[in-house]
Image 1 (cartoon, one colour):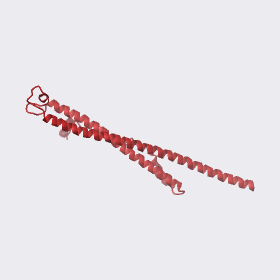
Image 2 (tube, one colour; image 1 turned 120 degrees about the horizontal axis):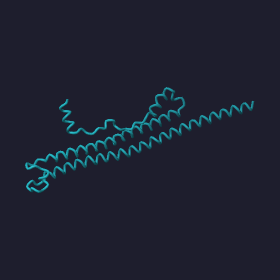
Image 3 (cartoon, rainbow, N blue to C red; image 1 turned 30 degrees about the horizontal axis):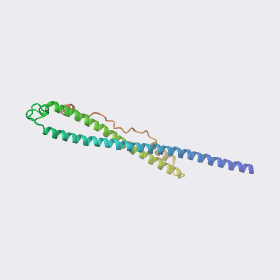
Length: 191
């Protein structure tokens, strides 16, 4: 009798130990997942701030440069035949054709680069939101797991795929260059 009672007590403690070990292994795995997504969120927040600032500075700098270039051209002297005014402007005061070409090419490259930086900024915002969402879902799942008999197998089947889905890279798929003036004109006549 006493040996059987001891064996039963030992088996009960052993099963409780196994249950505790399994719970702490799960808790450690969840803690690692939360730490991972928390670190990812901080990284994407920093990157979104950096690329958002760069995009804003580039836009403001471009607007100021265009405004100052316009003021500079308006102030050019056409009377001096050897000056810069005669190289940029015609006798009637209009811009030379090469200036238009240079301006269009420069603006296309600037707009393309700003657009690229904005895409990286938006990508990091998207990934930040995703990382925060996963961190919250994991913590919520862990809270439900602590409560015994709260989650059924069907609930787990719905929750776990959301948490452990494949991570997107955040980049917008359409990464083409801006429409060139030629493609705009061609598109206008082919519609």
